[in-house]
Length: 350
Ligand code: TRP
Image 1 (tube, rainbow, N blue to C red):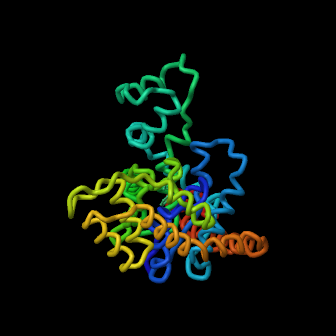
Image 2: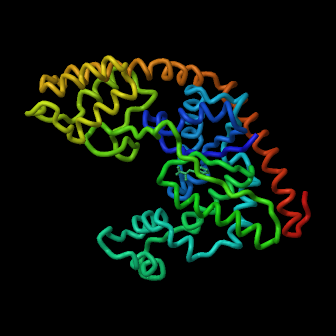
Image 3: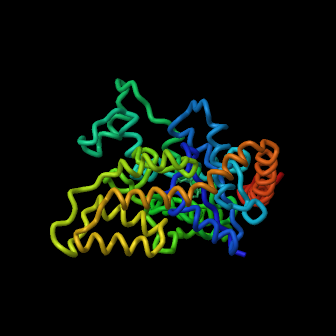
């Protein structure tokens, strides 16, 4: 069975965008592949080096994954920090990773620019310049620079061949392939397979935000969380931006309206969708009614998940057990790889 690895950074609760963008495909993948899904708590240190609540956020995500249907008997569900071998592989990979290639990745530049307090408008060269500027009192950590090496280690430690990720991870995935290849050529072995990105099929649903802007996201502040109750969902949906309505039959939908329809396509029945689509095309649409329907359908979708989240979170023993079993399984796979890696490089295998 082929191996799949994917990680999620524990920054807040899971929202509908996470569910339809990723978790839903994880549910299918766990039936067909040897899956490792982990919570990237070490990665969160790259931007939050002193998180007060790293354990509780990890626990929240764990409970939410389980509530969504990730089955610990099928997939290996674990915390990144529970598999220390990853840190060792990260060290080896870093020895052959170039500072230049790491500095050129787009996500590093974005985050470094923010951390060095460089305005977006300034040219790209300013990141390098400010990093070397000893008068700039802000600094960028080596951990942030080597984010892609850690991610490569996460993946190849299980010799994964497929990695379900969002489009925004393309460059990190390219780096992972490069580091896997480089290990093989450096030591003259055919050891690590090159992991392929696996863009979630099912037309990779991109859940829109309801505030008119593009995508649903935690940082965009427009997310509906799986753990939201019906009242909260209702409030959020009713606040969604609309317009004055179409003036002519069969008009093209402006983005804010198209987003509402996309949401409806995802959670509502075909009948409901067609009903409002027709109303829109006849210029008879009442957005208030549409939003009510949408809020109700999102509420119906989230309610059972929410119930399971609360249930699982109240069962401390179960959470601890799942995390322990996941850690053991992931550790076993990682230890097997590391034993060989040490041998290949020339260290004592155990
Ligand atoms: N970088 C990924 C993200 O921000 C998270 C991640 C860390 C990951 N390690 C990974 C994803 C390994 C897939 C495989 O979403």
